[in-house]
Amino acid sequence: MQRRTVLSLVLSCTAAAVALLVSGFGAEDPVAPPGPVPVPPAGGGRQRTGEHGTVPDDAPTVVVAVTALERLLPPPPAPEFAFTMDGRLLPCRVLAGVGAGHDAEPRAHGVALVAIEHGGGRLLRLVAIRPERPVRTEVGARVVVGGQVADERSRPLPGARVWLGELDADGERREAVTDEDGAFELDVPMGSGVPFVVMAAGKASQGRTIEVDRNPRPVVAVVQPGSDLEVQLAARALDMRAARCFVLPARPLSTGAAQWPFWLQAVFDGAPIDDRGRARLVGLPRDATLRVAVRHPLAPAGPPVAVRLAEAREQAVVPLEFAAHTRRGVVVDERGEPVAHAMVWVRPPRTRIADKPSPRLLPPHLQLAGVCRAVTDADGRFEVGVPDGGPLTLSVRAEGHGGREFGLDIAEDAPLVLPRWRAGEAALRILPPVEGAIWRVRVDLGDGIDAAVPADQPFRVSLPHAGRYQVDVRVDGGATQRREVFATGPVDIVN
Image (cartoon, rainbow, N blue to C red; front, side, top):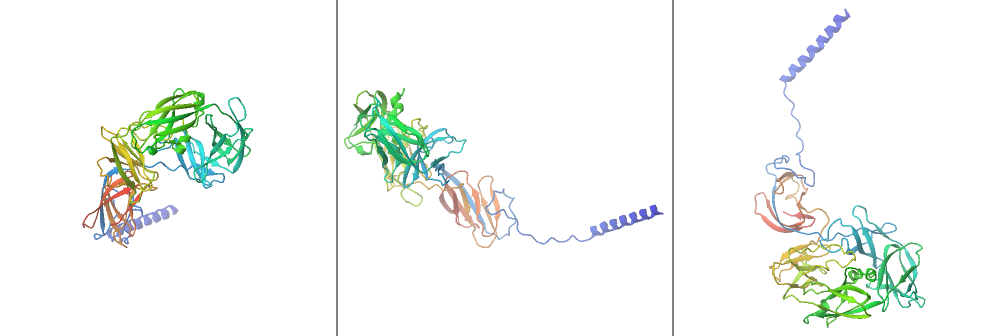
């Protein structure tokens, strides 16, 4: 009896379910309420043609065509590895070694000479660069460093100047002078890689790095006899004051020459040359062979001259051949403002600006042969030599600006525009053509972009690289507006 009741109940439920299913096939499907128009997220992700959301037929449409005209080269990145003890970032700049100069090779290992802005002046530090590890150098409280300087016979040397790599607001060295016992004291902020330089009349300058902590140990230096070198330029009379004289190491490097602070030349841009074409180099190591190079903006860089230093006073003649032609110009930014301290090279196309970091921390770009280099003045103006023979490239670089290459056929009265380098990815930020309405954008980059954009939202599209671009914009079939833009970060395109 119970079995029949259960079976009857099951059959009843099954029949009811079948009836409900059959009646459902005959009923009308309910109409879904209209939803919002699907649009991409604000910011404009890339979409292929046909993948955009549904937009009204009368939605405004912006068509953008982009043509790459020129690739811009990035400036040296601003280093961010100098800090106070409490973690405050200090501005700094690489003067020589790894990361110095323009077009430097990335991810190089070695030592860098950096100038850190601190207390209204600058501190020099030598920093070990290892790309696989975070680089950090700290500047602490001021402490007093003491020690003694002796001559080659271990006798106290009075009157010697001791420098710990600190420059005041005027760029002058903060130095101490040894007393009659050869002793000195000089305060300096704590840190590692602190330069220790000793200079004395008739002696070879000596440089090394020390660690300065809360309880610095006395520093002892023994200096050796030195040589003073008078350099005379063998050249026709032009503006000799524009030239600078540099000392380069020679191989093999003697013990005395190995202790000479070649890196000082990156701080003070070598030695000046007077109106008569003469330079005086003091404190060079005696009984050593060095090389002397002279650089002038109107003369192609020639090979250095080897000089043997055997006596207390030596002389050397360095030939300097000026280029047959010169080129004048002015460097400005995209707003037309002059760019001071920009570097301008005239070089063969195959000669690279980037050079390998010098183990002796020589100034960057010093050893580029056959190249003329000038630096713009406060008004952005320059004059640079143009060597004879072969095609030449006019290269322009400046800190904080995108680097560019020009042909020498550009008119001299045409300003050389060096755009400022902005942070972020090079991109176009296309602004909406109307307010309060969904709009459509089509861009010919990549495989093509066709997207619906929310009302009052811009559309962002990445560019392949930082550079100069021609951008053609057309709204709803109207007239095409053409413009050139420098994209070193996001650039707004106003319709």
